[in-house]
Amino acid sequence: MTNDVLLTVKDLVIQAQGEDGPKTLIDGLDLTLKRGEVLGLIGESGAGKSTIGLGTMGFTRDGCQFAGGSVTFDGIELTKASAKVRRGLRSTRIAYVAQSAAASFNPAYSLIRQYSEFPVLAAGRNRKDVEQEAIEAYRRMHLPNPDEIGFRYPHQVSGGQLQRAMTAMAMGCQPDLIIFDEPTTALDVTTQIEVLEAIREAVREFGTAAIYITHDLAVVSQMADRIMVLRHGSLVEEAPTQEMMSDPKEDYTKSLWAVRSFRAPAKAAPGKEEVPLISLQNVNARYGPSGPDVLQDVSFDLYKGRTMAIVGESGSGKTTSARCAMGLLPRRSGDVQMHGVSLPPDYGKRSRDQLQAMQIIYQMADTALNPKQKISDIIGRPVSFYAGLRGKARTERVRDLLNAIDLDPNVYFDRYPGELSGGQKQRIGIARALAADPQVIICDEVTSALDQLVAEGILRLLVKLQEQLHLSYMFITHDIATVEAIADDVVVMQKGRVVEAGAKEQIMAPPHAAYTELLLSSVPEMDPGWLDRVVQARS
Image (cartoon, rainbow, N blue to C red):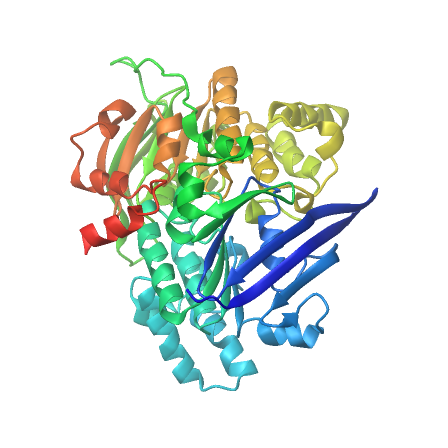
């Protein structure tokens, strides 16, 4: 890291236009970043982390504006620069890695075409040369089949692979500054280690400065030279990473450090004669008529009133197992039973009662909620479909569901998803699932994109609803801390197979299966030297 200052932010104010006048999002922030330095920005949802990250590029979201202060990048004052100057810097000297890769890629074009678009169209470079560079970038990001994966479309790769493809695209231009906005939230713990190491190697190799935005304190301790803690658009405290991790000064910072202490109440084990609510028995499944099996002989049981966590790396079959249970992906062989009765493989052949009994909350609330529908319509549709309610009865039911997820119906009933925070959107996803009055809810990575304070609130809400409504949860996650917090039973999956399954106390206590040990040892620790030790041990 050199002593040259690349970026200077002075007394920055960013405001959003609201019905009651301007609302201040960033309030008088100062920030400096040297060449080759990595600055970590942490804080809860709504702290202004992403707004600051975009602001350092001279960019504000629709409805927002710079209302004071300055952003100076290598001598260029971006808040006063022309649009042409700012566009010229982006994707050449400043790059951005967004949190939600699924929402950021164009679904109509292959990954490698989107990687090549700017160098070919704007810089006039040879497409074949750029595509070869893309393949090398995919290899550095440890993507499988780097020679071929770029020719797939976004929907043909996992969320973790898509996030790495976006990181590769941002690094392709070897920029002076990269804004990483939660780049590993969609990754499992073993993949996360590879990506963090690849990011760190690239930053060091090219002397790139970076702003690393995250809600994961353990991750930021591995990546950042310095940490800034934010709340409500203002700085809470700032310090070198080692000092911040070992001795935070402010009470708010200390609360972030201690947030993952929540544990759901323990439940009694199911009786030997109890029939599972959902049972997968020797299930095999594949995508397409002739592809390889992505699930191989998968068996596990979910009992009434319990939470079963399914853990494993990206591509291990966690979500695919849930899709087979719901009938969204018809199984090739094996059986899926509810209350001991076999369910049709295809959801289109299931009865309304069978469909109603099993609902899902998706990982990315940004892409799961229709942005053109009001919250009342999003929740109201399953209310009408399953309960047959109309008019005033439907309205009252929607209001009851909003109250159940701790959102004021007087405030949120007529809002659109774009007016909600990430945690609020995820609560709407929960309400939509509850609207069907199900017995089982599949929670697909529902806290992975949320900051730790908001994630804990979602977990507490799910536990409260489980106790009140006697729900069963199939909880898909790569976060071992979430497993510890909420699970009663654990299923560990790898490459489409079940490695081991049982009560949480049995699976999480040593001795572990070799793959389970790998997962547990890959959970980041709030120690700045942890990543170096893990990489060295595995090299």
